[in-house]
Structures are given as structure tokens and as C-alpha cells.
Amino acid sequence: MLRPLQMAHQFLAEVIQPEDTVVDATMGNGHDTLFLAGLAKTVYAFDIQEEALIKTEKRLEEAGLTNAQLILAGHEKVDQYVTEPIRAAIFNLGYLPAADKSIITQPTTTLEALTKLCQVLSLGGRIGVMVYYGHEGGQEEKEAVLDFVSSLPQQEFTVAIYQTINQINRPPFLILIEKLKK
Image (cartoon, rainbow, N blue to C red; front, side):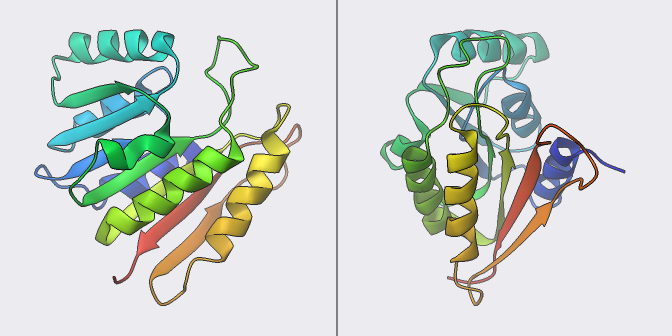
């Protein structure tokens, strides 16, 4: 069985083509940016912590990949950088592992970013949202994101959840979004 993050990568890899533009909405340690950079023409990766950019830049450099634009800004500013349609996006909500746990993604900015990305997502495009909610403020963001994706029009989007149900300590889960039509 795939873990939720493995499922997210598989879900996105099924639709990303070499000419595509994609977004890593929460750069973190750069694992998703690296994954996307190996598949797409252009990756826009966002994070508010300089530490994330440094780690991601190093990871990309070691892999010899130069097709990612690392942006020191919140994902809610995606429309200031991404002007073309995107094929895929990924979010890892919560905090940067092994860093300041008080710096977390916020419901308002996450919903703003999701709204903007859903608008520029191409037909058949996909968004994966890894929801980590076992930290202070995580439950509120989880509920806000679930409310948002539940309200997406079913004529335009299909939304599913992939999660383990017999795990303790609030295991992360994956929200899968696919755009059906404009």
C-alpha cells in the first residue's frame, strides 16, 4: 500500500508532461520540488522560510536540475508569479520538518492559494494536498481545507481523500483534486 505522500506523487505523475508548468505551494525541504522538476518544464516553488529555499536549492543543484524557480513568498501570492496555466500542484500543510514548529501554514493563505490554483489548473490537471494536522493550528486548517474542497462544483472538479483509518496520533492524509472542465 502506498503512503499518502507516495500516492500524491503517483497521482500527479500520471498527468505531468515534459512541457508542463507545475507548482510546489509549500517547498519545505525540497523533496516535492525535486520530484516535480524531474517531470515538468517549469516548477514554481513557494515558501516563506529562507531555510527552505537553501535546502531546496542544494537538493536541485545536486540533482543537476535548473528548471525550478524558488520563490521566498507565501503560496497565496502564486498569481504574482504564475501567469500561465498549470498542470499540477502540491501542498504539504503544517510546518517545515526539523525547523521552527511555530511557523505553520495558515487556513486563510492556504485557501487563497487553492482558489487561485484551481482557477489556473488546466483541464485534466491535478492538485494534491497533504494535510498534516497534529500540531497547534492544524485542526483548524484541516477543517477549512475540507470545507473548501467539499464545496468545489462537481461539474468542474472531482475531489477524493486518501487516508489510513487505523492509525493513531492524527496521521496525515491526502486530498486529491482533478479539474474536469473550465
